[in-house]
Length: 157
Ligand code: HEM
Image (cartoon, rainbow, N blue to C red; front, side, top):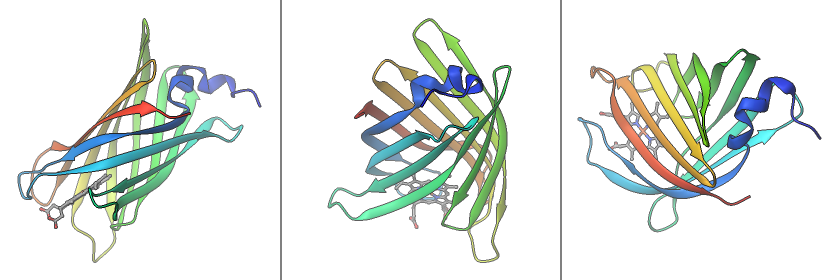
């Protein structure tokens, strides 16, 4: 199956990634976790993604799923569902500089009544060969946009 032409700039992201990550926020105790992402081409002008995470004992932690849409012209859009009760809708860019592809998104968030308040999610994926660096900043629980996640992954397939 060939990639939809709009997805060409996102091609380096397609695949399965796994690595070690760290979480932090001014309101919580920092933690480490194993991070795994899949960016899946389904033949349409978007990638389906699934993230799963585990603690050091192998117990499941956060998971999420969504889409990186590609209307073209270096623009991307993110639509994601977060099971702690948030939904994410945002816009961003995909840029290629030499061997480095950077996907950056900035999103509004809606929360279910029982969820912790999250107002904004800012994500950055940097792919260079078989290495993926991911960061996520958020405005949540009364804090401004502040780092929550830093992950270093390598391609598994
Ligand atoms: C879009 C994705 C995510 C969002 C919107 C999000 C949001 C939040 C929020 C709002 C808090 C609560 C902060 C507070 O109560 O002061 C939190 C805490 C936390 N998050 Fe995330 N998070 C995300 C991804 C992740 C991921 C990938 C992990 C990896 C395991 C993770 C692990 C944690 C942990 C362990 C805490 C602390 C829980 C506690 O101390 O009660 N989060 N997150």
